[in-house]
Length: 386
Picture 1: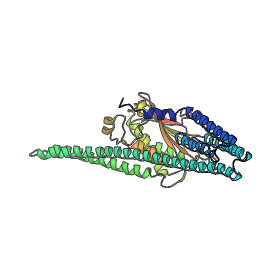
Picture 2: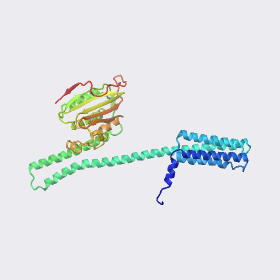
Picture 3: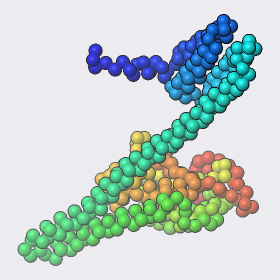
Picture 4: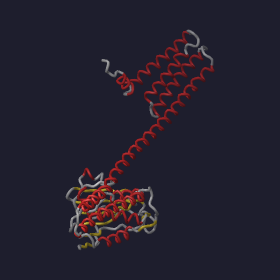
């Protein structure tokens, strides 16, 4: 018995449902009846103000529990104002109260309205503060995870390089082959550190909230140049799909970085002889660039996380292939800096399709480009196999 919390169930009853409103309406009507009886029986001049104030005080307390939104609050104020005003007018008509007493009704209502205004302002301020606090907490968590991942990515090559150097130092007379092999390993780990640092710097610059400079970019020409740079590499089958014509205001260098990162990701997860397809179309005035592969694919639960920093679907293989888990995060940062976004559709063993969306695609006449057919399955230009 001593450990039971009897307060919370009572508060829960008060804060839920509409029973409390019914109880208050009955209480208000009872006090109105008391006002009329006192006036009619002429019992104790001034006592009619006691139930009058009971109505306003109880209504204020009720609002403290309910804090209704606009319409309910307005109806409550109108109910109190009209009923107490009618009761006061009845007292004046019966020559029990003086006409100036009627001014107390709108004054009390205005006081309640002022209280409601300040309560709403406080609620809004509290909601903003809670949202900022939650966002700050998420930022702290992201920062902590980022620092942990970054430290791991940078300390791992240091540990590996140091281990091989210490092993070489413990040998009395290491041979040239051992020294050469150790140097290759250490240089490889230093190169990996350099890639991580460069990617972090790229991510920081791309995630600044806006592209470095905006200029009209022809996506068809950009994709054609990118395709030409990549088609002779990596032992894959390269295919150019449909191209969207027009211009989009973008940072051409950052857009090229994003496209390269998508293609590099496709190369890493597509075996030799596999297909990588690049193309773009327009929908509702937005440019949609797609990079499709028929590689390993991504599990459904990982599709929402592949754009996080340092996240790898297959961590061991990505590290062996030189991946640092920042390429797709850079794509996301660049897309969002341009007011767009990035997404992926994938299934294990089937392949993946990454889509980079940028708003504001316009034709040569500076008009929005009309929607085109969806997908990359139409209008393929050519196919090359190395």
